Length: 319
Image 1 (cartoon, helix red, strand yellow):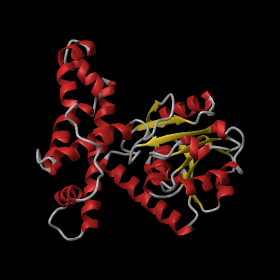
Image 2 (image 1 turned 45 degrees about the vertical axis):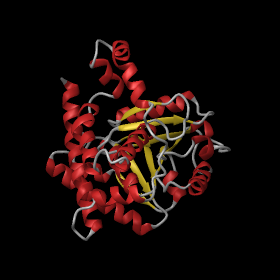
Image 3 (image 1 turned 180 degrees about the vertical axis):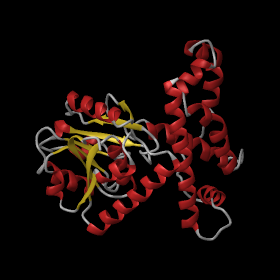
């Protein structure tokens, strides 16, 4: 077995995101300590990780150069926070999206880590200023927001606290690149970060189109998955525009007036409740009665698709 890379990675929280992060770091050859306050949850998480990795190896989708068994051997479980944090170089927090809970866990982490350890949060929308304010190691704190599930979707948004040291950003960026993720740096925090702001803009207009009787919920998803999403899987909206004309400035000159006209017709921000929410929800369920089975099966299908797409993208980048 290849010698594990120096330093321990600590994952705080053994839910779906924490498990996926543990797999990502192990695939990069790092020793991983998976912490949860409840011992049984850690045991369940480790069993699930083994199952996932064995299935990935069978399908040829396992990340990294190490075998399934070698990667699994790098992950250990803890339910004592102080022991888990001993000698840690990078901590990735993955507890539920609750500010009070995160404040509590960051305060506990802050009292146990050394002065060089990076403290990172997986939060998708909570402000770094609110989460890290007053911590002794605030200069080492950063948000590293993944896309669910991070094992299959490589994007990581790095969002600094106003007092975060530039070196913390650079070290986190380098670590994410080393484990095969695709980090982006936000120069400053903004509500919802970047991915969610773009995602919410799409959800908002999809809602309005259904609300106004323009298209069905299923068909609006098809517009994205079989249309925009096909392009966006490889290039973003700005380069898409750039390639659809003789450069981005040409695109603005050619289509700017039409875009401005259409944007002016967008309605108010939806409340995301009531009759339209019910209509969309009903459209997304199958006739089967067991909803939990539907979600589990569809998530597994999604992850398989993402795994194949990730593999294709890696191959395309080599060409």
